Amino acid sequence: MSANLYIYNQGSILDYANNSLVLIYDPKRNGKKEISTENLDRIVIFGDVQLTISCIQNTLKKGIPVTFLSNEGNYFGSLEPTNHVDIKRQKLQFRKSEDKEFCLELSKILIKAKIKNQRSLLFTENASAKEPAATIYSTRILTLLNDIDKAQNIEELNLIIEKMNTFYFTGLSYFLGDDFNFTTRVKMPPKDPFNSMLSFGYSLLIYEIQNLILSKGLNPYIGFFASDEEGIPCLCSDLMEEWRTILVDALAFKLLKTKKITINDFETNEETGAVLLKEEARILFLTEFGKLLKEETGNIIGTCHKISYRRALEYQIHLLIEALEGNSPEKYKPFEIEK
Image (cartoon, rainbow, N blue to C red; front, side, top):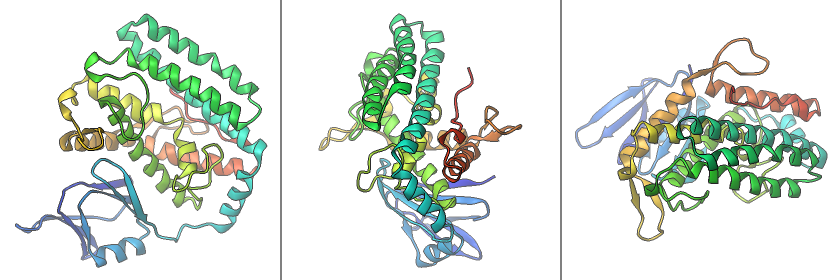
């Protein structure tokens, strides 16, 4: 089973010797361990971790990308091998990104799935919370499905999404105590603990998807729905829409409900006002996210067996390629939470 390697030991060194990665996690005491590169999809570096030239050269030779993030999960850049680049596929991707009808129809499919998954999480959490207001918002969010069908362009779709996010995050706020001070989604910097968890989780998810997109020869910066902002991997943003609720929002609630993460696991940056997970809590979230990606799910359209969430993400990219090559957005079957 393939996986990512996350390295967050500050001051550590990643080397390569004897056909294996060598993580020197305690340079002063020569504390180290060997890590096999077999079935390794990507290396994700958090903060102050050094890579030797031997490590850089051999990971590129083996086609293993390396992503560099800050301690808080902010993206710095990546070392990306080029052995998976598919020029013909990317040319097609560029052409379809200029096809307004294709973009609109595919965007509708993605956003409908997101709405259904958001409603499912609201319904699931409210089964125990029994908040009347949350019930109202979980009902309201479904009414937007008809509006999506009627949208004539991406601009109209974005207005619907603003309503969708208001309904969804307002509904979620009823499941969190006053200590979390959560009322709506605030991106960068996050100003409350729950937004902090969401921002960190979405960062992990978007670069998980980016790795899979690159492995299929596509360009992560050419999307069909997300606006073309400089430096934003728009295709990653498109494809993560249906997964935000499943792989990040639900995980955040699980960690809070089981008290694996509590209000005491956050700190405020005095300069920016950002509320951030403390180091131990970030590592715990990262570990649980990795476990979730390995969990198996059975509700994959077109398959007759269970596969891991990581492979499900990969399968969705396969469906996108089919939609592109067949000039048919309907070939993309989104992932929806089982009712």
